[in-house]
Image 1 (cartoon, rainbow over the protein chains, first blue to last red):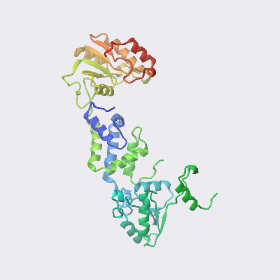
Image 2: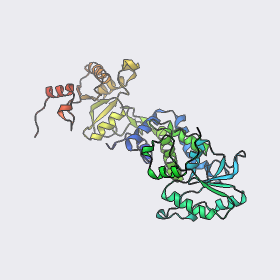
Image 3: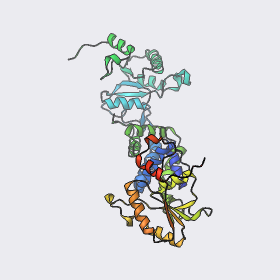
Image 4: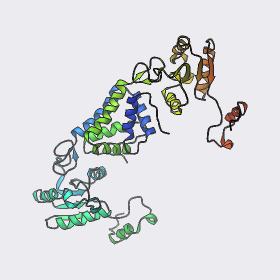
Length: 204
Length: 204
């Protein structure tokens, strides 16, 4: 049902703004606005100021292009991390995913996308020249390519592999294999095939 | 999966604020914030100012207690509406629902709740004395009780019926019957029974 009659245009405006968000319909927007209406002023201003400050304060790290609160992000400025190991990712979302594993102690380099001729994104649109500069200037030992196993991810990986072979750094990629918790009978055959070829010594 | 590592505390703050909303988990909150992050400043400030203005400008109509942008709401101040016909409802949500039907040309009176001893809500918590005052001063002809068919709605209806019988106004209630589009075999027996008792002349 469409809501046609609002008792207040401020209420209507707020609902319309919420309904612009992805996956939020008019009914849900109305429910969210009613919730906010019941909150006191300080809670609403907490909400709105968090959103205004977001756009105002957020930066891109000048070294790795990750999202950051300052010119150089927390990861790049952490002296206990191995700056000679660089993990190349598509966006800050992959940085978050890998950081969440708490298994990686190197730095990142955010490409800002993947090569996709269909979308008109070529290598020059990505943060590749800054990656080459980093590999040279920061004497990087190893570049891990942590890209999605999609057409775009594979194309970008191949391009980078050719481009970065000129440097004195090992180029590695994420292990492909059966996911933890996967049932073998449902694993796709490409993954299962690669996991047999790249089998590793059993660690009981 | 819980998100543990944010690249920016402003991002984290914004996600936490969104995740306070009902039905919005951390993942959805993150998706919504990323969407806002991609918008330009004017769109974000449109969103935040709509929310700040909401609480700041919204009023309660002094006549009918509906939500309003001014001291007297649009419905009460509309001279083409019948001010001697008053529809009593629980909250502004029922006003919106009835206005949406575009079948009612009278005014409303918002009780601000229903009598519910379980929740400690008695008649004195509701806008009943102002309703009595209106019936007298505005020479109301008919009071329609449009309350939910729940225990609380029926209790409130009975209370009001007794209270308002002292006045010189007809007291009516919404017709109970089979909903438009309902299959008879699935209609509950109370509703079906009432709809037979209250049967009306067939208008072909």
